[in-house]
Length: 164
Image 1 (cartoon, one colour):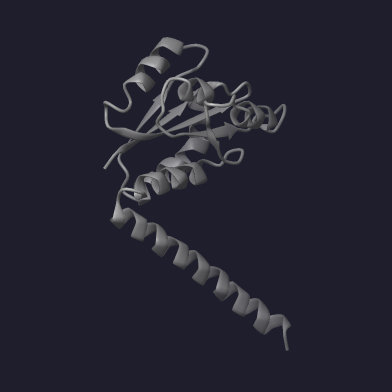
Image 2 (cartoon, rainbow, N blue to C red; image 1 turned 90 degrees about the vertical axis):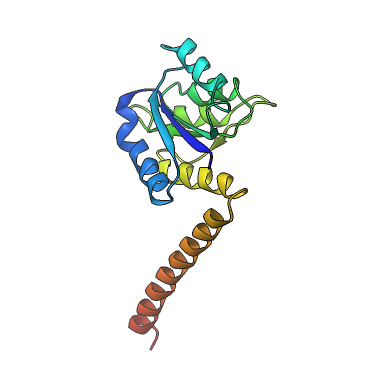
């Protein structure tokens, strides 16, 4: 199975990113976690990304706040799927990071999840890997079924309480 690279621009992003790491663990996805900055360590970021496919990665998740150029810098250096997580901040709530992550030029796509949406970023990475892994695909289907069952149970409780 291909690995997922999880890169964050700062270790201050870790509390958010860990939600995605936990999803990868839940699905048994091999991963590596790194702190690389598009601005402070551009050479190391580029070196890692340029070698990602050779090193067994199939998807890269890039999390950054504020200027949030990390996902774009990563995507500029690979054709592997890149998923951006815009990280919230006190000043703007993460809108700056969201716009910086989602507004990529034509030809350099970054799939972008919600602000602080690390769990969905990891799930999207799992879905991408599941294209070539039937067992992983089945795990995702079962998780969706469980989610539907929970909602229907809550619906039943609400209906019984209010719909006489």
